[in-house]
Image (tube, rainbow, N blue to C red; front, side, top):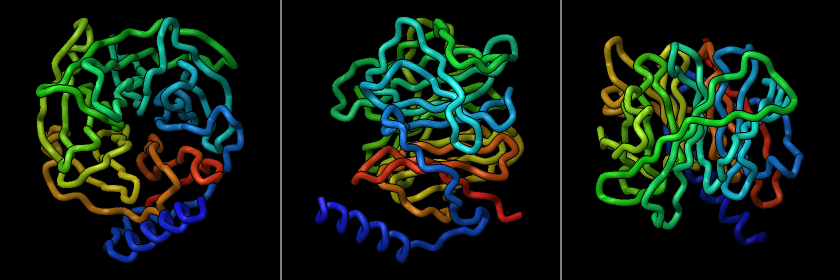
Length: 286
């Protein structure tokens, strides 16, 4: 364990030295250490568009099939159980538009470390109008396949402008960008369209600001940032070289989410090396 930890710190320190970081956002502020055992593998967070200061999260493979609710201080407020759904390998969560103009929570069953699953899934439920300690929802579901066969992915984003849904692969040398058009979610199944690729690998989380103007994608060691021009699609914005933001790498940070006003983003890690997950806030400089 000590050897692994030393290697972990060495890689992180070298990453910090080697990169030129943009100062659009300030360095991290620790908000809360999460000590509850059930949150040892938080792998996705996304802020509500309905309730001020509330974000949703979920755990990784083998965890409960639930979406948890937290306030911006990291305190748990309740959970929404997804009826008749298995958490095979949930990897990311997003909030975005859905039917009837309502705000929905999207959950990505997209993890596949060994690329053995022919199909992955996205679930969605409407955002709750009232926060309850415990509730249950029957989600909508779409079954997805990739062109060219199975992929591992940990990044799910929903464009708040178009409603289109994006999945970013993880293990390709240049991570692929796949799209599910908003109007195809009602299909029972769909083959994703590859719409681009990133000039880096190991994408583990991402988010789009509520106004659609900012995009974040993170790897284990870096956070990449794009601003979107008026009229651009997400894939057009991602075709440009990103800025690299200040980031203190976490033991296994696989979650990132914009504050709704886009003036801060939050990260949290899964528990690794006996280090409890800590919720961090990165605030915009201006």
